Image 1 (cartoon, one colour):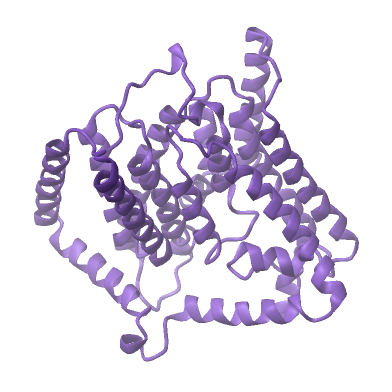
Image 2 (cartoon, helix red, strand yellow):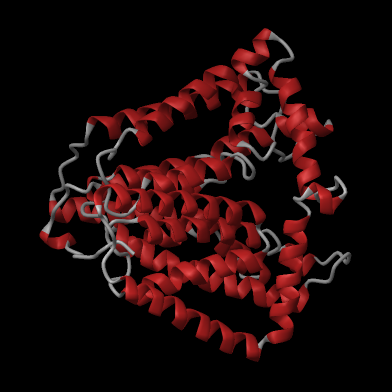
Amino acid sequence: MELIFALFYLSGPLKSVFDFYQINFPVDFTIITAVFLLFSLVIKYRNEKISLVHERVNLYAFVFLILFYLWMAVSLIYTPSEHYAYVKTMNFAPNLIAFLFPMLSKNFRIDRFTRIITVAVSGLSVFFIFLFIRYYVPGVKSELYDSIGGLYLVCATLLGINTLILACSNHRIFKNLYVNIFFILFSISLMFVLGARGPLIFVILILIVFYAWQLIKFIFRGVIKKDMYKVFLAFFGFFVVASVVFMVFDNEIIYLVKRALMRLNLLVPAKSGGNMGNSVNIRVNQFDLSVQLIFSNLNDFFFGHGIGSFGLLEKGYDHRSYPHNIFLEILVELGFVGFIIFVLFLIQVFRKNGKGIKYVSMFVLFYLILNSMKSSSFIDIRAYFAVFGMYMLKQNSANFTSDSHNTNGQQV
């Protein structure tokens, strides 16, 4: 079941790979994986007589998410978008599945799912880097590269999720400590090489806060992780492997590192001359426009301009566009009403498992919130909703015990 959910979770980037190799399916791949998910649930419920009793907080969260979707549908009445609004409304539906599926699955294995995703996303990232080196030419338009061009940001965002789950969990995802640390370091390295600035910066900041908190606990409580010498040994082993890889692919790695540093330098005003790159400049302009649209009048402030309207209001024609900040996007299109409903949903998520977790920590949630404020549309964050769902699982609670879910791990 975790494998099927992993395919659904990764269906977006996998479709980019299929497009690149011109592999066509008669039905959208996300729909195919969603049908398999539903089918697997039906079989499991039929064979195991699973009770549909759920905790109240989980139920409240799902109710607010449904209300948010219903308000989106209501806004179809007054949106100026005549086509994309309906596409956007339908494309939000997989987020509901991503959030609900782990809760409906008996004994959903967060550790097993994360192991699958960690290996798969690492492989996708290496695949993209290989294609980038082979096909990308600066300043030259390439339809072949454009079909997978957005993978760098998607992969980096998912690598950030994996990194923080591996680093901040109270039980190891991989039972072997060396493997756990290898994938943490490997994921951070891939994020840097991919050149996705936001996810990399957010992960580093959150890791600094997390390990500062660990240090404070050690100072005041005398609590420290076991096997620290193994951690240092794992770091040493990773850098040995990285050195060997560098000797084999030195030219390619030097090129990727220079590109990554160049992109990071654009964020420093003294070095960029005020020009932080086209993507940042577009986001600044969209931020200014969003603020204007939100406060254009009282009616638009409370009810928004309608789902899918941002692209039309920005460029004058009906197309997909968004301000790269889901909260601004919600305020523009669904107004203060939609914003409040979504915030109430998030409050239910954050208030769950506050007394301790096993795998998905609140640090991961903070990363998702930060990342959602600089990229993506709220219809594209299926992985975020999946993580929200896993965070709320009783299996993620520090107090949860089960003979079938015994990992006996320690924090990395």
